[in-house]
Length: 159
Image (cartoon, rainbow, N blue to C red):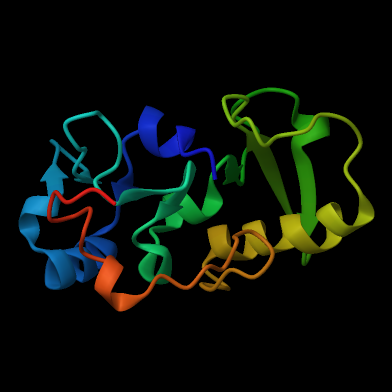
């Protein structure tokens, strides 16, 4: 809930995610690049949907959060492209995947992962990456954002 990922990176969205955001908040909350769609960034450089509640940062798109945000800070791919293949390897239903973490995330703790993380939390990230699962349980705070607050940041209002 530090919000650093939402401040440091542009959020890439797929066409389906773009449609949902445009339907709810309008096309002006998105930006198109040459070959990608993005969530608009606010004047301070952060994601347009990043909300600050008492020094805790929350996602205004919690109920329709893009896949890129659900997976942060992990990158899950089917080929070892970023090195350390043996350390990054993860077996899932007879598939060998490679899981990498962005070291910019302040929530990352280095060392041997717990059984719970390896067999439950990481599994959820993998299932989201593979499109098997859409909802999050272990990989988010699951805070319910009241409807009346959902469009404040997108409309330029701060709270």
